[in-house]
Image 1: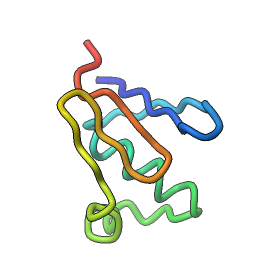
Image 2 (image 1 turned 30 degrees about the horizontal axis):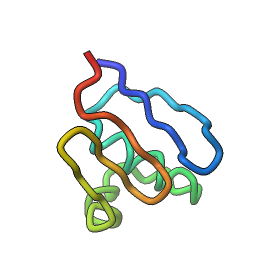
Image 3 (image 1 turned 90 degrees about the horizontal axis):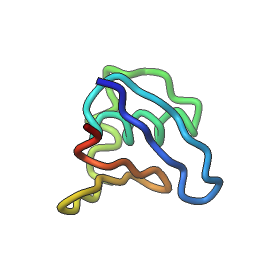
Image 4 (image 1 turned 180 degrees about the vertical axis):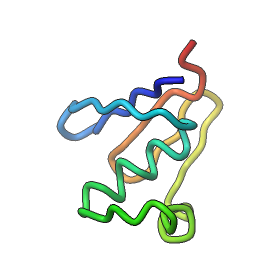
Length: 67
């Protein structure tokens, strides 16, 4: 499933093929040039904020259900 992530500051969009939570964490980590995907959850999971419809990490946000 393709997940669209939006940078709320720049309006730039990125597409990931994982869960919305993993996608916003990846976008956030990669904005710091961190490409070590194995450690993303451990390093950045604590910064995730989840609502009923959205998930965000830093300036990056995605809808949970993108069907």
